[in-house]
Structures are given as C-alpha cells and as structure tokens.
Length: 496
Ligand SMILES: Cc1cc2nc3c(=O)[nH]c(=O)nc-3n(C[C@H](O)[C@H](O)[C@H](O)COP(=O)(O)OP(=O)(O)OC[C@H]3O[C@@H](n4cnc5c(N)ncnc54)[C@H](O)[C@@H]3O)c2cc1C
Ligand SMILES: NC(=O)C1=CN([C@@H]2O[C@H](COP(=O)(O)OP(=O)(O)OC[C@H]3O[C@@H](n4cnc5c(N)ncnc54)[C@H](OP(=O)(O)O)[C@@H]3O)[C@@H](O)[C@H]2O)C=CC1
Ligand SMILES: CC(C)=CCC[C@@H](C)[C@H]1CC[C@H]2C3=C(CC[C@]12C)[C@@]1(C)CC[C@H](O)C[C@@H]1CC3
Image 1 (cartoon, protein in one colour):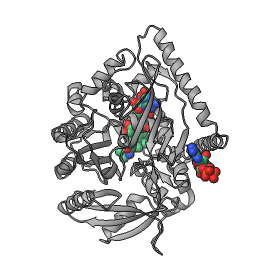
Image 2 (spheres, helix red, strand yellow):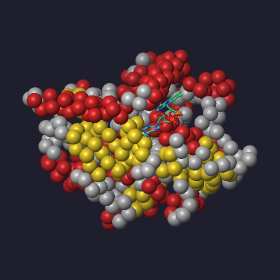
Image 3 (cartoon, rainbow, N blue to C red):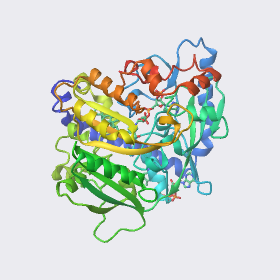
Image 4 (tube, protein in one colour):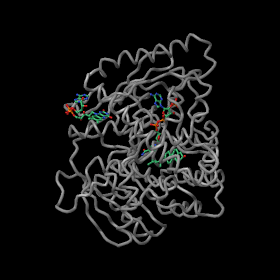
C-alpha cells in the first residue's frame, strides 16, 4: 500500500481495513482457544504435535542438508521489527503449538506450548487467581519468542528477565530427538537457549513459575522535574528491598518524567479505581503525563490485567504516528474498542513507502545498560535521537551461565531504555547513529535487544554477548548444518 495511503493517510487504511481485520482475527483465535480448552484436548494433542515436529526435522536430516532450518511462522506475524530474510530460503518447520498444557498450582508452574501469547496467558491465569512473575505487556508476544529472544517487564528488577522465571524447556534438536533441560537436567542447554533465537533447536514446551495474582495494582505516580531527581528516585525505588513489586519510568524530556512504583492489592480505596484498559480511557502514557503537568503525586488502583497491558492499546506511543487523532475523546468512545491494530497486520500491509519512512525517520531500540550508567545513557540518547517519551524499566541480571553476564560476574541491576519514535535531532542517520549508541552500550557492558535493527559486526556482537557456552552446545548438538549462528539471524543484514 503505497503513495499517500502508505504515508500521511495511512490512518484511512488502518481504520477502515486493519482495525476490523484485527478484530475478526482476534475473535477467531479467541474462539478457537476457548473451544480447545472446553474440549480439554490440548494436553492429549501435545505429544502428537511434538512427533510432527520430529518428523519434519528427521525428513530434513534424510535430505542433503544444504539449507538451514527455521520455524515456519511467517515473518509478518512476529513482533520483531523486521522479517527475517532467511524465511524465504531456509527449510521451514511448522510448529503449530498454541495451547496452555497444564496449570499445576501445587508445584506453582504453568506448562505451555511456544505459540501461547501473553494475552492468552493473562486471560487464563488471572481468572484462576495466578499470574506469571514477568509478563511482557504486549498481548501478541509469544512464549517461544520471549524464551528464544528475551522478555522484560516492570517486575524484572525483582525477578529478572523472562528467561529467569523459566523452569524447563522441551526442544526438538538437530537430529530430531526430544531433549528436556532445566537447571539440573542438561543445564548447559538450559542456560544457552535464551537469546539463541532458535539456533539450538525447536522449542516445543516451556514450564514457567506462577505466583498468586491479586485483583488490583496500586500505582503511585512520582513526578520528577530534573534529570538528577529522576535518576535518584528511580534508583532508590528500584533498590528498595521490601517494597515495589513493579517499578517503571516514563520520561517526557531529559529533565522531566514520572516514576511509577506499584504493588498488587486485593481491594481499591474508594474513588481511586482507574480501569485504564477500557476503550474510552486516554492512552496510558498521556494519562501519566498529567501527573507531571499538574506536578501531582498520585495514587490509583488499576485492575491487574489492565495494568499488565497498559501500553498495549497505544503500542507504547507508536500509535500516535499511525492514528494521530486516536486519543481524541470522540474517537475513543466511537472506535476505541477496535484499537490497537495488530502489529502483525501493520507489518503485513506496510508498503515500500512506509518501510522507507520507518527506515529513514524512525528509531526503535531497547538498550539494556547497568543502572549505574543510566544518567550517561540518557544523555547519549538525548544527543543522538532526542525521542520522548522514553520507557525506563529496571531489571536484575544474575551471574548465570549463558550469553549475558553482568559486570564482574556479580548480580547487577540494569535498566532497559526504550526509545520508539521519530528522532528530533537534525543529524539522525540510521546506521551511523545506531552504531554510535551500540558502541556506548558495549562500552558500559550493556546489551541490545535483538528484535530491533542491529548494525554491529559479528566481532562486536560476540563482544557484547558471551558465546563460550553457546558455541560448545552448538558443537555437542551438531547444530552447524541445522541452524545458522545467532548473528546470522539477528543482524540487520539478515532482515528485510
Ligand atoms: C470470549 C472468550 C475468549 C476467550 N479467549 C481465550 C483465549 O484467548 N485464550 C485462552 O486460553 N482462553 C480463552 N478463553 C477461555 C477463558 O480463559 C475461560 O473460559 C475463562 O477463564 C472462564 O473460566 P471457566 O469457568 O470457563 O473455566 P475455569 O475452570 O475457571 O478455568 C479457567 C481457564 O483455565 C483453564 N484451566 C483450568 N485448569 C487448568 C489446568 N490445570 N491446566 C490448564 N488449563 C486449565 C480452563 O480450561 C479455562 O480456560 C476465552 C473465553 C471467552 C468466553
Ligand atoms: N516487553 C518485551 O519484553 C518485548 C519483547 N520483544 C521482543 O519480541 C520478540 C518476540 O516476538 P514474537 O513475535 O513472540 O517472536 P518471534 O516470532 O519474533 O521469534 C523470535 C525468535 O525466536 C525464535 N523462535 C520462536 N519460537 C520458536 C520455537 N518454537 N522454536 C525455536 N525458535 C523459536 C524465532 O525463530 P525463527 O526466526 O526461526 O522463527 C526467532 O528467532 C523477542 O525477540 C522479544 O525480545 C518485543 C517487544 C516487547
Ligand atoms: C517494551 C519493549 C522491550 C519493546 C517494545 C517494542 C515495541 C514498541 C516495538 C516492537 C516492534 C515494533 C513495531 C512497530 C512499532 C513498535 C514496535 C511494536 C510497528 C507497528 C510500527 C509501524 C510499522 O509500520 C510496523 C511496525 C512493526 C514493528
């Protein structure tokens, strides 16, 4: 869809085509998973589905093995910014595994298949009074994508990344056999799977910790009017040993922002309930900004599911470039219930014009840096892109084996700095700017989230991510012919 409808009038396509299409797409999957649950067929079907994956891998083994394998999930369906170019040439293995298999409240775990989405998990678990400790907020993120890539949320400063609450993985590996791994069973594989982007095997099931859920989240909004104040408040709140199940920051300029500290609650104080997930409510980032503008500390109670998906309706703040009048009160009441358009459908229907627009004038990155370097990092982002709001999400990084190591191999608090939008600097140049930021991140011993465009060379990538264990595991599982090295899947060169 090119020309004007691919540019400034994209909202016409979005409103008249993509929103209804997203709605019917959701209903189809909702009904399907509801039926599967009601027929209780998912657990019995799992072994059959694993055998189907094994069969496909074994067929590849019998062939001449001259191309690598990847999942058959089309590139447009994924939440990653671009599509893998390799999806056109690799041998594709279908993994149609979309079911929650078992919720074990004694063991406090949920076992699910890799295509289960975060929206599906919250619907099922929260109704039963449970939740997963780190719940990345976009409904369509999948368990498989978050395990093979990474996931983060405002509870990560207590729990860690998505990988840190996973108990075990079940994979079909290069020779077609099924391997289960955990901290005690095949630990090398267990620690190598996160950030391996499907280059060690095909994931078929994941066991994840669950924790009790309460009805509400009590949110305290703390406006800050200088960078020092913001960094200090954010750091103190993140470090609090007892309090704050969730900590998050939104910055509206280099010198202003709101730090939110939150805890689950069983009931709400009268007059302070705010169901921000309702279709007529303002976008969450706009709502938060009002606390800054009024310079008001505030307390609100948000229903748990609304809190988890607080950035879903506005796709963080990306929706304002797609439906510029989307936060208008009339639009919200009339059509707000259809929002957001599905990221997958936005990807599928974007023409060359939109692609080029995003290529040249847009910057989507999450950089994970040690909390102690947050101030310097924010100044680098101000100088290089000047995009606001900025998302700030703290997380702890334990010294586990695998791709990510904290400085000096001692548990360290990090912060994810998320910048999504149009750069406001004059000298923005996608490759050069991103490379300078990547260099800064490597210098402070941080990491780049690989769903975004990465322009690092192979050497720079290996410098950022420790490949020692990963290389050993790839060798022991004979991955060389079956899967490419991770860099060849995630670097900008491998994506279109
Ligand atoms: C419109 C609509 C859309 C829905 N969309 C989805 C969806 O997208 N994804 C989805 O997963 N569900 C979906 N559901 C199912 C929904 O989660 C349940 O129907 C809902 O929780 C109502 O609970 P219940 O009383 O029917 O079942 P409950 O017995 O209260 O159980 C709640 C859910 O958890 C499941 N469950 C219970 N125990 C276990 C167990 N040990 N292991 C695994 N599962 C267990 C049930 O099958 C049920 O789905 C949808 C339902 C509706 C009406
Ligand atoms: N809050 C957060 O934490 C957010 C995280 N993200 C990022 O989005 C991505 C997840 O998006 P999503 O659309 O769910 O996932 P994707 O389909 O983009 O998958 C991500 C990677 O995981 C691999 N993978 C997925 N499933 C399997 C499987 N069953 N077996 C083997 N490999 C698999 C894919 O391999 P292949 O290419 O072969 O299909 C791909 O390399 C992650 O990279 C995550 O970091 C994005 C936004 C927010
Ligand atoms: C919270 C974390 C860690 C990351 C959030 C990242 C998201 C804001 C982006 C991930 C993929 C992005 C895409 C778009 C917007 C921003 C993301 C959702 C588009 C929808 C923007 C419009 C384009 O036409 C398609 C993009 C697809 C991916």
